[in-house]
Figure (cartoon, rainbow, N blue to C red):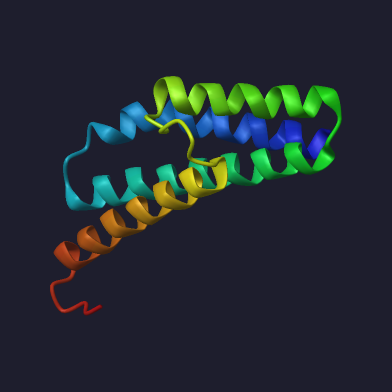
Length: 110
């Protein structure tokens, strides 16, 4: 559970930084914001999977709470699996990073 606690702390640290990073509207600032969003989402995705694999009652309860938060605050549609939700969110973030990277360096191609 120690590794899980480290992941939880890292997610919390990054989530606290997100509002500050979001204030910078420069291309570099937005890239930094989406990089942090990617890290938070990836950590949460991995954390959710670990909790589900652990399979004990406490771990499943935490995973269920993560799902509730995703539905209540992150616009996760009902009936969509957490795997699909996280994958879709990560694809959206990658798309934004790709757009911003092209803006930063117009010579960048797909």
